[in-house]
Image 1 (cartoon, rainbow, N blue to C red):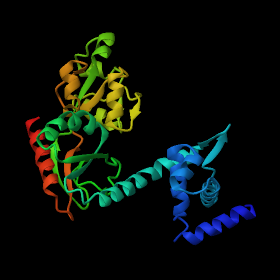
Image 2 (cartoon, rainbow, N blue to C red; image 1 turned 90 degrees about the horizontal axis):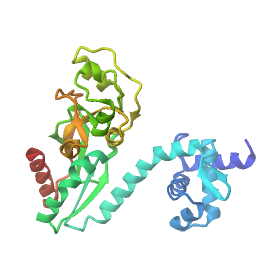
Image 3 (cartoon, rainbow, N blue to C red; image 1 turned 120 degrees about the vertical axis):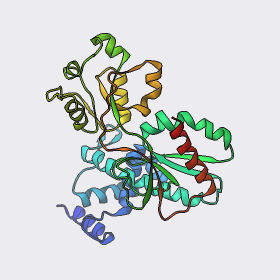
Image 4 (cartoon, rainbow, N blue to C red; image 1 turned 60 degrees about the horizontal axis):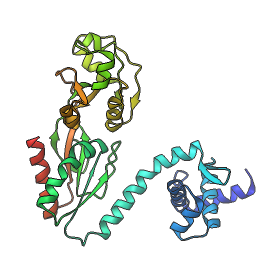
Length: 309
């Protein structure tokens, strides 16, 4: 290791509590570089000089002993390690910004923040939101993403979560069933022919949402052990929905989340028999927080909409 790099590592360790605690100032600078895609723009946002930004980046790279960026012509782009590191840290910065914004805006007595996963927001919440806004036009609604992997504590008054209903520090009320049914796009059916039996479905292209177990469970309920397992795997339901709509294959989708596409005929439900993986949509509230009157109104409205749906 060069003397300069050794000095940077020793300096970073002085700022850290352990070998696993990175120099937070340098991490903040790297996050700005990765998010903005420019060293100069990061410097402007952080109100420091470009040379200071470059120094902090080198400090972090020396601490991690990996290159996080490299030059491509005049552009600074992320390395593979840099992209992976940014994916890992950006949710933490999102949480920090949400918490900070929430605290600074607490004096706005008519604001409610709700966090939710993208598919629920796009297909269920947003299409109905106009009804709430029409009735309560004086309440400001702030919608943010929920971290669907571990649901880190966020700044939200309410959160819509997907899982078993058990989250430490939260009260959870089941809102919508998460049972899944097999669906395909109308165009997929037109090209491949209608799928009128589970045995025929087992020979058809399939797409997978988060894992490949759900299809196995569905086919097992029809006494089928062999089926195509080689279809693409998508990280979340929003991507899976896009894949099914694009005709990549048949997918197991949660019916309330695709109701509008089923109603329009763009998607076709192949069989009525659902599969239940034990996960549902829950309305969650932090146990250590009393909801404002505005948040209570939104909470009651969500429950009423779910019951009506």
